[in-house]
Image (cartoon, rainbow, N blue to C red; front, side, top):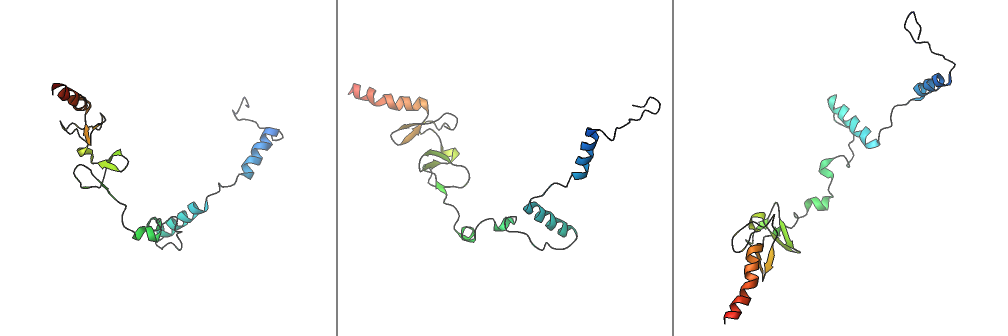
Amino acid sequence: MDSEGGSLLLDEDSEVFKMLQENREGRAAPRQSSSFRLLQEALEAEERGGTPAFLPSSLSPQSSLPASRALATPPKLHTCEKCSTSIANQAVRIQEGRYRHPGCYTCADCGLNLKMRGHFWVGDELYCEKHARQRYSAPATLSSRA
């Protein structure tokens, strides 16, 4: 630094100065992807009041599905095995091919929702742990009385 003016004196012959100058001169604008560039051109044309001349199908949301898929029937809905109605939103998969509504995923005895507890099979029914234990031990108790 210059003691009087407080300005920094640069040595224009130094290798560091030359390297910095080369970097400034050689710096080019970052390369854009072709899809981004097309989208940018379409948006700019829209801002100017015109319509975009070309918008590729990969950027068009309505043509993202093949025509055969778009016209096909909607995906098959699962059927709740307890109430026998279609499950439109969220399904609980009990086993392969067996589903229930979250509200139908309950103990057959007490109606407790089994979502956070898990389920136990006794025969073809779902039970909470308490009632599954009772059902599992009940036949042994009944047969010992007979």
